[in-house]
Length: 241
Image (cartoon, rainbow, N blue to C red; front, side, top):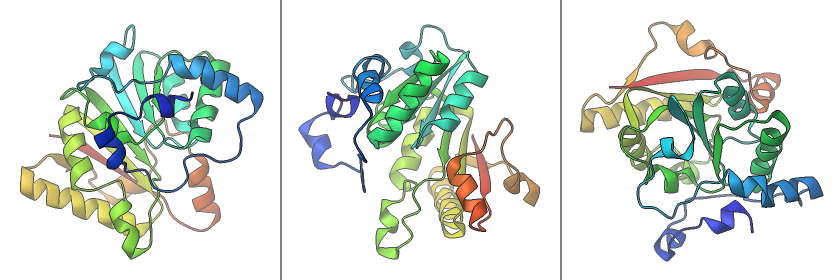
């Protein structure tokens, strides 16, 4: 049984699942399947508890970060190797992406990663308040058709979850190559701030701040594809007030 199937949660959760699109691609290779059954289970996050203190998922972590929709896990693994003292949670519903990250954990001996093979909202709604120091949302699916905009990850519900989970001074990083989604994100955060008080403070002071990759940025395959196809990435950063 994969981590995804073992952590689906209650019947009420199943009825309100947020995942759209594919959750599985081609069959896993034998080594990937074996790692998912062994190492994958050891690093998976259980949703059994109504409140999760992420610091307790690690033996020793100076702080905890979360990456939402990590794709193949390249960025997450890079950050985990660069910051071995930081515990990093990753959420990804696509099982093939999870399998890639689990293989990377095995090959690089990374001990500071925990994974939820499911929709990030099921974890966000359980996280203890002020338990995250940083959250990454990097190149999320833009759902460009107007009738599908409601499927975008940034919305009132998820911003409320993030506002509760991020500690004061914590950081939300959002990167995309889709101008409409960048505008959508800025507009939704501005509205959230108007309705809830200044919660997410955009840290940019000049255009170079959103045109320049984050410090320690390794790049991603999604970003490389965007640049090849002539799209310009934008890097937003918000501080939790």
